Amino acid sequence: MTRPQRAAPFIPSRIRAGDLLRLGSAGLVAKPARAVLSALGVAIGVAAMVAVLGISASSQARLDAQLDALGTNLFSATSAPPVTGPPVPLPPNASERAGRLPGIEQSAAVGTVAAVGVYRNALVDPGRTGGLTVTAADLTLIDVVAGTMRTGHWLDQATSRFPATVLGTAAAQRLGVSAPGGLVRIGDQNVLVIGILDPVPLAPELDYAALIGMPVAQTMYGFDGSPTRLYLRIEETSIRAVRPLIAPAVQPGTPAAVAVTRPSDALAAVDAVDETLTGMLVGLGSIALLVGAVGVANTMIISVIERRREIGLRRALGATRGHIRLQFLIEALVLSALGGAAGAVIGSLATAGVALASGWPVVVPLVVVVVGVASTLAVGAIAGLYPAIRAARTPPNTALSS
Amino acid sequence: MSALLELSDVVRVYGSPPVTALAGVNLAVATGEFVAVVGASGSGKSTLLNIIGTLDRPTSGRLSIDGVDTIDLTDAELSALRARRLGFVFQQFHLREGTSARDNVAEGLLYTGMPRRERLALALTALRRVGLEHRVTHLPHQLSGGERQRVAIARAVVGDPPLLLADEPTGNLDSRSGNAVVELLHELNAAGTTIVVITHDVQLAGQLPRQVRLSDGRVVSDSSRKVAS
Image (cartoon, rainbow over all chains, first blue to last red; front, top):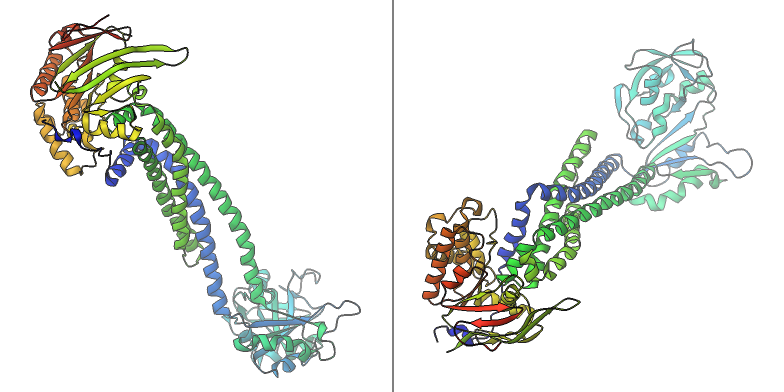
């Protein structure tokens, strides 16, 4: 016998993993335009998801940084609307009372000066207050709310006794004041603007206020000294213990008439609303991914039909059904993985673009990228399965003669 | 005489209503033979080639190749048989466009699990064997028809299979290229490869040592022996 393998047991058909990968990619290289277009569908889906989650994460990072900078230990106490009867105003010495509690680092009171508006000049109709309030403020206010001056100076012992005002950002804009030194009309007096505040995220009501000193408010505008709001900084470690004591300390007789809130909670709530929107957008992104998957499946089915001869030839060369199935499955996987990788890059770039344009830190969560690309692999596997099975079922004899 | 290929009472019936393509074929091919299977269109010769090549299964009857009874083999086992013991040459060449002659030939060993480097080395040897050492990196569309068929033959014999099956190997070639291909097949046969050629080209069949004639799914004549009709 010249051929010793005659009696040898069967050596099964085998193909190396590297060769399978090469075959899977070769099918795509043969029709590059088609591959790029069908990968594009997947890319758009992944890009949408990565961008939505990345932008949301960047905005979250900005908020976290903001909260870190502002602190979450600022509390605000106001007169709560009563169930029956007239509202109970905070007592004039509310700030001192609260300040005596252990764990309170700083306190400041503000009081809206009732029935007094702020105007550009004496000619403006008093009814057109522009939504601005005149507020008497303690000198400690700026430190308690972590406010900063955009320009000019904060009130001091001297200016708080004179007709001088510090404007909130929005108030300055509405009054057409961009620099200190000008006059605005408060009530029936011309008042000197000595400074303009930056926006105060934890006390946005101050943005719409013209702030004047407590003494001048009482002497010139008849302010009764009852604050409308207290701002309190509490030691981080004492928050839990001190918070319930604030209302009784301010109004020992009717603690229920004092509402204590934490302004940073409102910022966090804004973010929670964002999450709902993010969820919807991710949903849209996954629909795009699904449409991309349908594109991949479609491309693969066409590819299988067009390549019946190749399938037949490979079967003649010794490929098993499993080899054919794997070849087409890998082709679908490579196709969608390319789309996924491209989508991750596009989504990350979009995130970076939006974040940089908004002045946020750029955050592309790695887990989002990994999950995005992994989901394209899952999508590729599902989209490629039917075409691959169909390819493997092609009878070799009919495939060759077609 | 050791039979490399043996068919007994092979019947193949297709579809519904049933059409009988092969109506009981008996054929034995010994190692080293060079056989032409001839017949008109519809005589069943393509079906016969598919069955011998294990690309199709007989409805009934037995087929053994290289000492292996194929009837009870699984699909994967038939694939293994094709990968190592059969070589195919087609009228349409079936080369992969955009892939060099050498890579096309190396594909003949793809499903043996041999590393690429070794496959490419053997492909070079096979191309030399078919006289195409100067066309190694050429793409199929840069080759003439005759050269393409020689690349296809190199792919079929690169794994040195005991049996080579050729389906109208000269059908798409002019007579000069066709003669060169037939000459090449003769050389391969002389070097020990058993070859079965399916053709309706009587002139080609006449150049081969043994002719088997099919008609209506039966062997009606065999130049090596008398067949009862």
